[in-house]
Length: 491
Image (cartoon, rainbow, N blue to C red; front, side):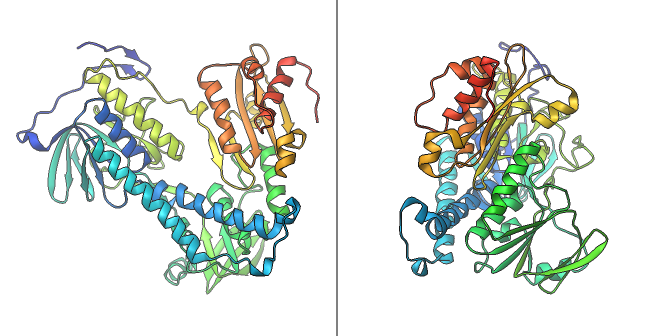
């Protein structure tokens, strides 16, 4: 069969064809889960000429579109606008009668629901337009070629598992009662509270917890973050985490308590231990933001290889240990990011198409060193590649430079001078090793560095690229120029 080449995941072998008795319910690919990874993968499979079916048990668009990325960002935008009007308008020469400014929670929620509705409807439309067969219900894999949904069997040559993840919940004294009363909530519940709380406790200082802290503190809620670790946003470079913590605290309505061990839940209160002493804190709600667990229900009996945390093991082509079975997104436990899931979906679709003889399908694989990460606080944080802390631990030689936005004209004009661009490269060939940005537009700016890393550009190419003036992107150019010159002037 033409087009087969040796790949990093091993030889590209022709796909094993499965020929069932009833051909009408047989597909080249069945995708289970219509989240960002699943629906992108299904559409790509169809575009590559594969007969494709997708199964979704609840909401098209999955966690991201319905109860994750998108609704959170709509709330963050409303909260940001409210804070700008009530606390910062005078800095721009705008006089506002604050007594007349109200945060209409019902209208904010309605806007969030409208945005989600438009996107999920769009997903269904795209699947239909690309002639993907959609089936709603809970899927169970009977074997690697057979999926049962609503007591009806469908067969396939290839299967893509994109079942995602759900929030972790505590199993502490009082947890059940606290959840039943509505006091203890998870990220899903935090999106649709009946009203803006006066006081909110958040357990966990990771990305989700801190983003929700930003939503509610901007709306006037007194937020207390209980963090087990000595820092928040611990995945960041230490100087980035420190700078972000300073910015978040300086804007008020937020207290962070470190070294906390949560013990139990009472009526509208959290009991925790710190430095050997027990404390109680009362609030209207308590958000448990302590990570997520993968969903493998329906696929536990087909001998998939999983790690100790229950994540499905895959190679760089998203192939599992079972021939013809692929897994993408959160369920692989690699990086629980929507754009990782969608990219893995593209990789799996192309891999399947190549195995079925499509010479036009791309030979692409996953490289986690080039995945950008974004945190939608205010200011935002974005990063890609290695952190300086990681490079120090491994003894890797590197050069680093930070350029502050306080020295950028556009930042001064915007009134947003906090943060910096931090570029890291290896000293000999100036290969980009990492980039970390704190800025009100960091999540948009990081794509320049991601593209540079993907195309194997160096600091030299970034420095020679003309960055428009005035713009915040000039900070990237300045940092690159400093590293390229070999004689950076530190601010």
